[in-house]
Image 1: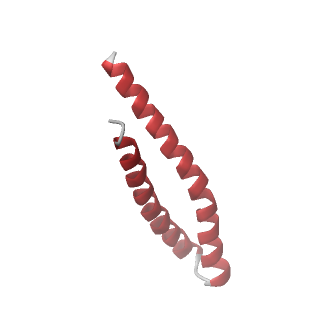
Image 2: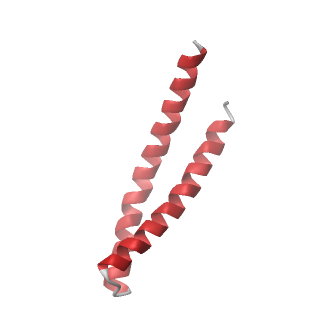
Length: 74
């Protein structure tokens, strides 16, 4: 029974984290790429690299905040 409860909690946390990520990352990605290519006139390769860096940074912070939130119930 304990194993089932832990699995359920882990799946819930993963689902919430993934949903938050989808809501944040798609608009952020579009904005970063548009900013880089249209306004900063960077190459598509540089835009992709900047996009990668920004999404990675946001994902690390997001994951840490979700983990801290869910660790209250551990």
